Amino acid sequence: MRGLIAVLCLSTVWGYRHFQDEIPNGGNVPHPCMANYIWKGVGHLNPLGGGDRNPFGLEFKNAGMTWTKALCEMDSDGDGITNGEELGDPDCVWTKGNTPTATTGISHPGVCTPYSDPLCQASNSWIDCNAGFQCDALSDVGTKSITVRFPEMAVPPTSTSSYCMLLDLPTDGDYHLVANTPYINNEEVTHQILLYACDEKAATPIMDFSVNTTQSCSSAIHQTCTVLIGKWSDGLNGECLHKDFGFRIGQNGFKKALMQIHRHNHKLRSDFTDSSGMTLYYTANRRLNDANIMTIGQQYLAIPPGEAAYQVEGSCSADCSSRKISSTVYITRAYNHMHYLGRKQRIEQYRNGVKLRVIADDNVFSSDSSVTHDFHDPIELRPGDELKTTCTFNSIGKTETTFQGNGNSDEACLSFLAFYPAENMKMPSCVQWKGIDMCKWTDYREEFSVIDGCNVRSFQNTTHPDFQDLYHNVMDTCRPFMSCLKECKEYTEKVLSKNACLIGDVGDMFRKLTKSSPDVEYTKFWGSIDSCKPRKSCLCETESETKNIPNQCLNSTGGAGSVRASTFAFILSLLVYLLTV
Image 1 (tube, rainbow, N blue to C red):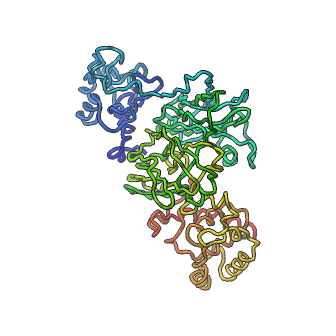
Image 2: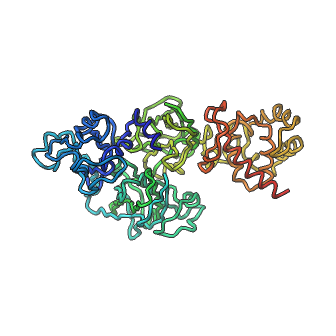
Image 3: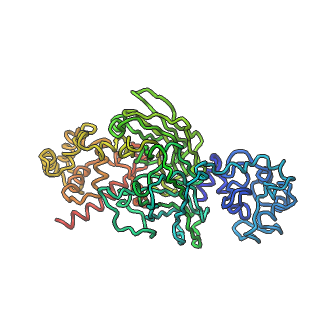
């Protein structure tokens, strides 16, 4: 991992992670005027790294980017304290990989301290200590707060980990949630916190989840807790909702929420603990409208290694928005989300095929420096408008395909849009899987029985006459999980290659769903079809659990192709088949 980071830091804004290890206590330098905040890019003007260098950064560069005795004895910021004294190496004896003489009482070697000293004002003029979280709602009369935290727990010595906790929201009144701030107990590992409101009237009830108990996150709980009402990631100081709306909680609103935390233990240490969370601000002085969050983006990612600018798109189509949005909604905030391979991301709005505007354009994206785009004058989003998010990734230095997932070693291409009034948009998740609008596949199944020329509803029904005819023809000419028979190959080339349900994105979706299908006959059907499928046209895997299966298809004609899905599904399906014959 460090080798990868060393390569990336040559061209990205987050190279400080590599250089932190080159100086004593490099990952433990505090911000001079923000409590519980680490100045991660020690040599840069930007606390998160990248861009222009501060006085220490300039001298560190002149020293060849290494900790030398001469650099240690310098006083880069002119406050009368040597760089070594500020970084816990007063005798200038520290070497890379060893523990410094002091690990507490650390200060910034590029910032004159104490910050408030009049003698330091001139040299510290580039630091804005008033750039913290600003939110008028926090000081409004009647605003209350509650801090919700995960219990103190050991952080696994793994690259990434995530946990969920169900919690009770205040129910002693009828409130609007209007702001949140992070409570970060261990900045070394805490990467992201998400808070989802739970619909207790949902078709899938909350099951097997105890309040205030940390558990692994499950798909079942996320089917009930779907409304994103709070989020934090590196670089954000908090969220302050637009003055015209809030998230309804309490007696007439959400009563429970699911808090999810993602941690990144990049040093793989086994002695880390964490109990981070959020402080929620709410008021009985409710605002004019209830709020919600719309999610757009791409659910299928297979980013090949060695790509300097690999682009992915995900749209909320006009077909979907015309059904999800009953009347105009107003967007007040936009927030782009990718992980460490992300370099650029933008959101565009179209109406009748004509681009109206770019809603948010992060031309230089860093997952460690999240940016929110607030609109004092809300953006109108009407039924039938199309929204498109475009993500650009840099995978130089990677040796394997990167798939979508929650971990930092996985990737994401999502955008979140805060809007009001909430009642004007139902089911506000509007994403794609490859080129398939998921609203058509899941939310409006009856209206879109045919997708890309395939009657997906009849094809999913193994008892349907159309499927039965095709099934028997396939089983008569092919053999599941066996070598390719001549008659099967001929039938595949003449008939199956023209069936809209077996090719393109729809065919890939069916193959993906087959992996988890309990129907053995359905599995045998696909095993028969793919017995003559060319290796070069294999399907890229999207599930992170198959990443350790040897890659046999990196050079496929599909660009990001991989036979991991076919291999994995083949092995599982073959076992099922053998047990049933």
